[in-house]
Image 1 (cartoon, protein in one colour):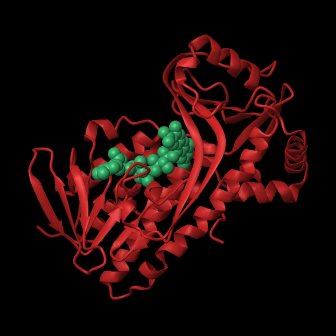
Image 2 (cartoon, helix red, strand yellow):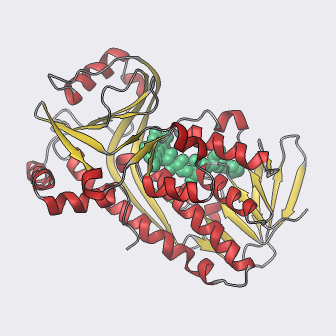
Image 3 (cartoon, protein in one colour):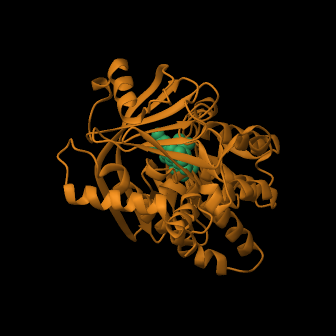
Length: 390
Ligand code: RFL
């Protein structure tokens, strides 16, 4: 069998690519190793930047999101037992949409499948062939156990951080390890505030962000490699109250329905393509969730890739040739911002032992951000991703 584009992976990147290709009349097949039910229930991100929502909407992919998702334009730093509100909407004029990633995935799968889009769930043993030729192919075992081969013009590697497609790239892998862990939690609790809370505290960083009216995501800085078993309910909530609480802003407690340790690290593969294989999303770059950028970057890549492939069929290979550079420009802005924000979040921690010099630098940075209009405007535009293609 033959198609135009084989898309490996049905996360936000792969599904966005597939929807756009299908709408533009370009044949494609999506191969996903999990079941549809699994990907529609996998909770991860939840904050989508306004430019990305507009980009989804411009391609007809944001109807449910726009009619149901609340939006936020401010957050609070909390330190020294006080609130320090920051309105990025005031400075950048844009907001986040709060829409759990699994809702977006559900919408994108439904829209693609309802229009007759070709998608195989539960595939195994995906192997890429002849990517340096103009006639690559992909072999895999389908859910029924049958070995199959799909010839194509292009392969979109959208199989995320644990995928197989990026192993075919022969460029450079650049990595960074923060040496920090975050205990990622989901609580069955209403959000305690109508914006994100960032707690900067000597006991370690903590954060709070809404997901739905009844579920809240929370994070606690912990040693890298720590075990979630070290964090029973009582300890989690005690630390959250200490690191995030303020006298006039109690936290709403609830049952913890997800609890796992994320080691904060980043990687970027340069370039993001080889021959007829083009990576999009976390297969090409991981950015630790410090600044909530990963899903947004995945969508950015996806739209550029789908439209570059469309341009190829229209006789223009320029966008495909520029694809990697175009995407990496924003990737590196977001990586740099995450590093910058990490210093603010994590430098005040006294345990593990503090570096008092770095802590003073972080405090100076924070004071400047909260006092200087120029600093606030600069922060806001990259925080919401309004301008990041430098
Ligand atoms: P995904 O979503 O991982 O999708 C990849 C898909 O490929 C499938 N797959 C394969 N299919 C076939 N064959 C194989 N060999 C395959 N290997 C894998 C997988 O099953 C999957 O369906 O990658 P994509 O599309 O690039 O999307 C990236 C985003 O998922 C990711 O960046 C975000 O979730 C990151 N992230 C956040 N991003 C934000 O923008 N804002 C946030 O607030 C935010 N919070 C988070 C996050 C990620 C988290 N975790 C779990 C890492 C919070 C957490 C806890």
